[in-house]
Length: 277
Image (cartoon, rainbow, N blue to C red; front, side, top):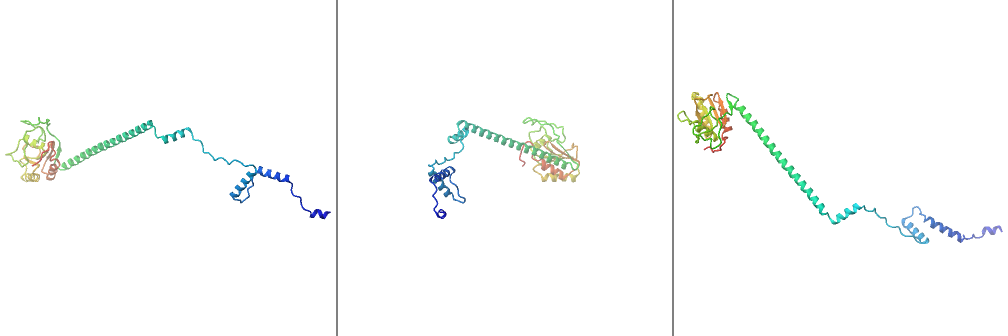
């Protein structure tokens, strides 16, 4: 009897046990095998779903809902800016343009004022340097001149001068031409002052000046024949002098370089621009 029991066939598992196993499998879901592919898992899942009666596919994920302001902005982008927005943008552009224009004008004015100030300073420095060079020797520079009435009242019949030698003031109608004069043909002061007004330079000397010094003055006059009048003057306070319009140089002796520098610096600087023949 014992041998029959050992060698006999096993009983098949009961049907109820198989059903319980299937129910447990449906509850717990399909087991994923390690190292398995996604396709195998998908197959097992679909098979299990079929056993369990099927299930609905998951809904696709939805993005976050747009806020009301974002929706309005999106609608504006589609429809374009409103009239009020266009007007506001045009006003901002106009203000920016006006601001740039004002800044440009201010910059130009500042540049002009700076240039004018620099030019004035430069002219003053140059004038001071010139006067210093003219006064380096025995000569003295000044700007003394008699007052001049506005045109046409500056042309008078009998002008009188308090500054000797004269360097400005009312004068006769006719000027004197550039040349070397002597005691016999010296023009009246009124004509010489009129020549100064036209930009000429007058070199004055006392008649008792040595002949050699007078010859030097004639050489300066010949060198600048279009611009210089050489005139003797017994009442001269200094042996030699040179005058341009409202500028004077009084010297104790003949200094040729200084006189030539005076001529080249102040010729054609009179209030009336007249071409010198």
